[in-house]
Length: 201
Image (cartoon, rainbow, N blue to C red):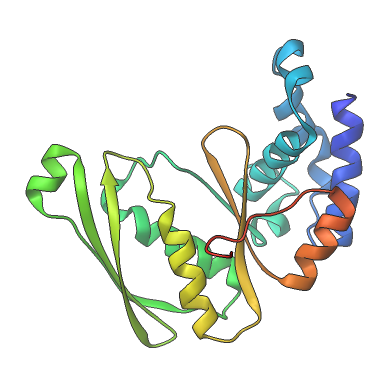
C-alpha cells in the first residue's frame, strides 16, 4: 500500500465529512510511515485510518486544530489515574460542542483500592443537570472502557440525536467521535469501515 496516497485520500474524505486536517498532511503521513516497512505492510487499512484519526484528533500538528475539536483521542493507559474519568468527560464535552455539560464531577477511590491497584471507583457527575453514577473497574492505570456504553445511555436520555462512536489505532489509543447515525453511515460509505457504537446491540 502507498501509505502517503492513502493518507491523502483519507484526509480528502474526512474533509467531506466536516473534519479538515489537509494542512497537516505531510506531518500526519510522516507520523505513520516512519514505522518499519514490514510493519506497515502487515497493517489493514482500518488500522492506518485509526492511526490517522488518532494523530489529527490529538491536535499536535499545526493544521489539525479544527480536527481536534471533532475527535477526542486518548491513551487507555492513563497517567493521571486520579482524574482519569474527569479528563474523559472533559474530552467528550469538547467534541459535543456545548450539547453535553458535565458538572460536579467526582472520582471516589478508596485508599486501599488505590494501594492495591485493583477494585472499583465511584464516578459521579451531572450531565445537563441530571445526576449520574458509574462504578468504574480499577485495574492499575487502565481505563475502564465500560463507561463508553454507560455514557451512550446517558446521552440517549438527552434525546440529542448523537452518540459516541469509537475506533482505535490498533494499539492503546481510543478514538472517540460524537456523531449522528447519518454521519456515521456516510463515514462507512466513504471508508468501508464500521465505527463502533458502545452499548449498541
